[in-house]
Length: 387
View (cartoon, rainbow, N blue to C red):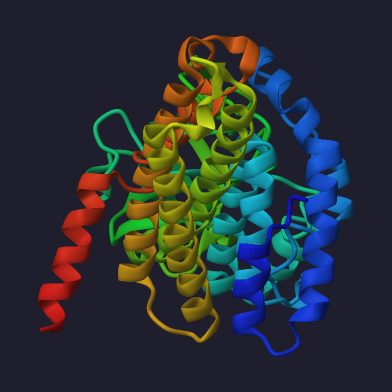
């Protein structure tokens, strides 16, 4: 069963009426196991963009957004549970949902009502009928967002954008891309539609993991964007980016838990099947130690992540908690996946058993949406500021 008791227990602890959420999550888990998991290895090996048609029908992307924008209006921990199961089945699928949720939340929080209705509802970003990408990183800077070089000059009712973005997840498949550029007032964010003249997706870059999603550059040359596609206030893009990244970090933490859970469950089963020196290796104390550490760390990361989602629902500032969840969960996933390869031994190093895919996918999570080093600095800064 994909919707495991640990998830069910947390949802039950958070919500008195948990039964209705549990039934829905069990249905999503069954769908992930039967429809997404069987293609996950192929998606990775052949670099195939995941098919989101059936996922859209199950309403996963719509879970945390208001009903007025075709969302389901459900609590964030429910969304996190769904993301965890998607990542357990296929990290590529889950990552696109994570990016989608981050962009949609940005438009919901900072867009005007016309932008919310047009892009979240009419263009179908909330439900997943339309796809989104997030373009902040540049060759000169990733973590240092204040130093980006892409610029936007206002000419009448049009902004003219010039610059270059790099390491952007899936802009080639996205219907809209949220692009950050500097105006006279500072960093600002713009909703750019695919196919806009002067906006060119450059080569797809081969990478270690998450091979089903493109990682591309974007060349922006005299790209004209209507003033009405400025998201929120001119010059407020840095604050918007920070708040959107809080969402991204929380959802990446859920991905880390799901990836680690997949590696752990495979290791558990393999240890009971593999024999050495006349016994199943599950009887060896050193293997049991690895399995015990895996289970403990996964559950600790899960609790921290769902707690952050609960705080988000309560309207709390989650900057520190989101950073903690992402930091701990991403590094936990690497440890768990590394131990999984070790438990499999030589078989863990080859493609046939499909175990090192999880380590390759998890490796991204300590970098994307804020490196572990940046997050440690942020957590310390917030803690020091509060004392």
